[in-house]
Image (tube, rainbow, N blue to C red; front, side, top):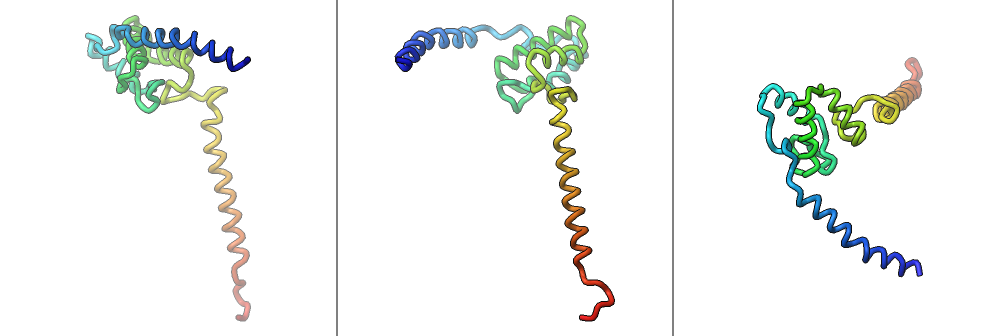
Length: 149
């Protein structure tokens, strides 16, 4: 019975999902997605910020380098907000608030990201302690000078 219900839901949901995906891809890109700002100083400021923001679809490229539609929308947001007079810090905080800490290549220490900064330091301390203990044991296990062989 449950399989029949799931099959019926899949049949009815498939056309709706495919139409919404197609509609998203058929939309024209945002105006500032692929067009630079006229003022070179503002464009340099936008480009510097876009190099530090990660494309959420590509995940290994900045939004400045990515051709994904989502990266184009993010570039449009950055450029239009810079034209509106917002600072790069304000734009970054808005994008982090909207998409999460992962969008930034330069995450800030917060209640959710502190383990990312603390765990490597803790591991280094543990490795250092283990090495000190092993080296200390080797020195104490060595032959004592003055003993006859």
